[in-house]
Length: 285
Image 1 (cartoon, one colour):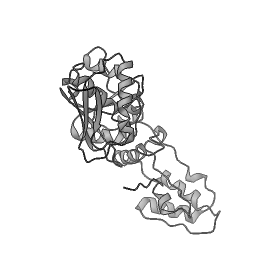
Image 2: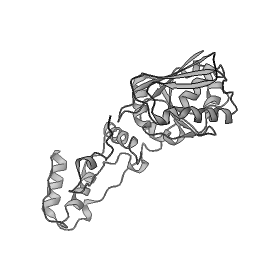
Image 3: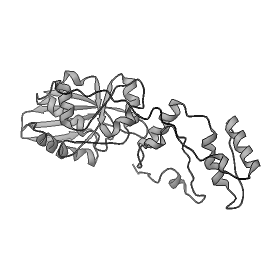
Image 4: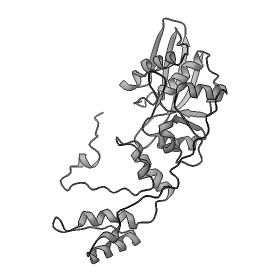
């Protein structure tokens, strides 16, 4: 039997669609993953096997082939654990495929079947909205993904919760983000004593959307003044906030609820190299 589960890869701030195809056939018991998987994806077969067994499901003693399509798109991370596990359950006849066709799935599995958060949930939610499908993510990612309006977000803690939802035994309610009304706090320009010309320049630049260059010897307050600029800018629009949050979502530090709708301020040292400015995360192909 062939099963197809919808998911999303991560390519910068983009989240290209990935179809997880699982085929069960006769042959010696084996689980093979194809479709340009990186090391973390190849290791998912051991995590998925233990998660299914510890969740009291039957792991098929047959030949299983998992294809992550499109085949030319590199796949990385543990985000495909959940769709692979669901694909195996569908292919082995333990789960009805009908309720799963209009959803997309992301999530890393622990050996016990618990869902662990992944990076890039917000970009995936933006793409899921365009595709017209709902998105199921680990509960830790649900607040972040639910920031996108117009898409149904489901948050689950365990593989058993996901399966119980689709079998009708336990309903997972649509997740509502608690961050929509969040009002960020900034450093206040009123705290600056003196510097009347510099403060006037900040106000003019903020009002007209102009660029601004501070020059002067160290210790005169250039960085202090620059850090106050986000506080006098207009509130972020939804598109601006989502774009900023999407960048944070794929970063190593991850999305922070305290930074929602807060204009970012970066303060690189003047000796920083070009590699340091882009995050020091350059990979060779």
